[in-house]
Image (cartoon, rainbow, N blue to C red):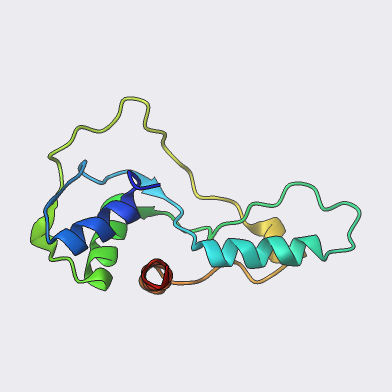
Length: 130
């Protein structure tokens, strides 16, 4: 979706434009979509009758600010273009605890581990190929 963070960073990189952002203190589990697909395929091939709910995530929380800075570095967007704090945080913004990935480790390891830099690079390359 074009209004989401990574597409906005990619657009700002193409336009060589500044990007207005919140302070970025929100914490999220940033998981590359390719890792999610791989986990879903492994779970789909499981013959366990008691599969139940399995969280698909890295289990590591990263602030939106850190993700944004690392993504900007990967994309070649100067950090000076990141206007942290120029937008207010949304009142409905959810707070997150770390995602428990113990069942994933037990049922269909490994836990997703693609770095932010690699995931952003893969996403950029896929978008460029379109």
